[in-house]
Length: 229
Image 1 (cartoon, rainbow, N blue to C red):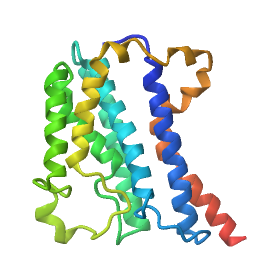
Image 2: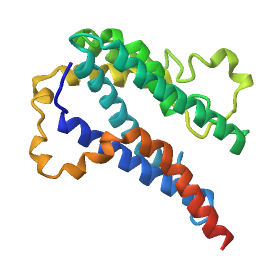
Image 3: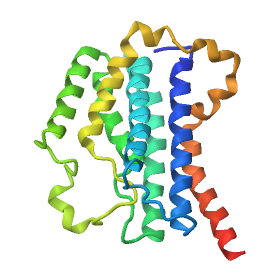
Image 4: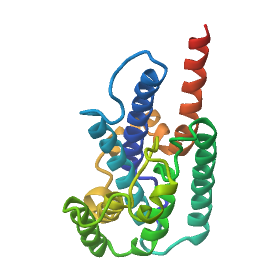
């Protein structure tokens, strides 16, 4: 278990959370009628979202490796998992109230909770993780496994479109690749450590869960107020 933070990991999380805030800001501009851009599913916007998800999930895998690769700290893991699971539940409840036809039943935080449970046992096996990651992504790309799995059997009872959906396939594969990334000497040597002289760059990455939970309610409050005015 690493005692010193990897600055590169915090910077990558900062990159991901900043892009997500920008993405949601643009989405909210469309939602409140300020622009008519085809977000989030239009050409280019979907790729933008994929960059964000890849960044987050590589961080998740690398973090699992660095924190639990030698020995799983179950107390630390359980506390973090509980925080994420409760946050995911809160998002589902709020989205069900606000968007009952398009509520979020398996979004980013739901996926992170499930992927953490699945991948924690592989944190000490980076080579196997890389192999599993490649297999999972390949199965998805070849259309052998649906991105809707395991919800295919209950699909009629779920929204036809969710405001945020992250499929187990292929994204679980990215988490497994993140475990492999976290095991490399290149990553463990903290290649972006020279940015430590700018510690504020890492702050968003160190508090990504809080930012994730807070930024959308703030945007909705802001745009709602502007709409009323």
